[in-house]
Image 1 (cartoon, rainbow, N blue to C red):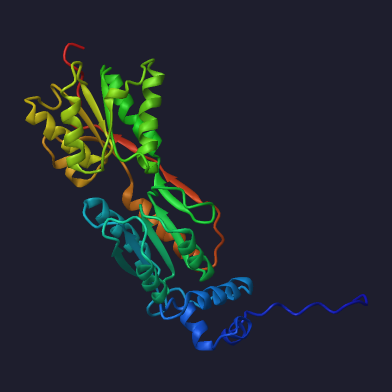
Image 2 (tube, rainbow, N blue to C red; image 1 turned 60 degrees about the vertical axis):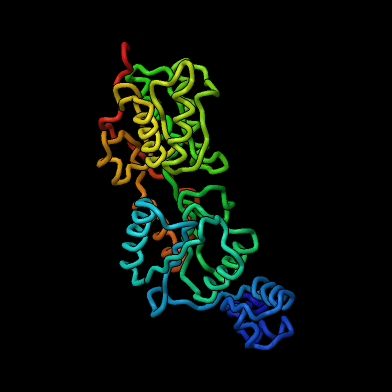
Length: 344
């Protein structure tokens, strides 16, 4: 071996006492910050978290150990969509010896500080957020504690450091519209979800692209925006059906909106699909059992949740992230709510 400087010893994981010394606080204070306790002043917390981050402290956590779990956070629990997500995440968590802790944000899309501190205090292997996102400070808190964070069906891009799992929403919007074009429809309306949400924008973009490919100009009067709920579909369809040249078909943002469109048609004395064809998105159980059974775009919701849980498990086990944006395929399911327009 040639003469020279001896190799440097491997860098050791910093201890809580070393972090406490660097930050100028007690070891119990550092422990409170690491475990997400609320009873630490903001300046002290900031100083400790900076020391933790700069010196690479990561709390020890054993996958599958007693108490190890995945946090599954919904903005609200209210539909069959949520049940599919729970089933998909539960399967993967169970296979890996993890529990699943479920919480909701009462229709808010970002958790408050108290809710975030509760999550941190439970020290999960990872957090799966459905629709809802986290603020920059909240994402940093998870990153500093080496807690995996994945968003299912994100309403906004959480940034390159955090993975997302979604369906191919653009392709789904295009599939639904192309199906109606192939049947001969040319006055095709879109009742979309709120356009601040990525899935709604992507589905509408797919609708627009399909019209453009067919040589049809987008008619702004045929595009209506509302919430992803039956009431939204019903109210927007009521306005569409009062147009002098009403649409012969509607592409809805999800199955709930589609059922609301069907209700508005019935109230207007119209029949689905004889007078108005309707296509949904999601393929929830209610789509097959509605009257008439709903043509819709199947979104692999359970598989999306399972993929998100798989990312959490791999990251918690120290496996590097190889893909930050996962998009699963969709398919059109043709049932009885669509047919060629009258006379055409």
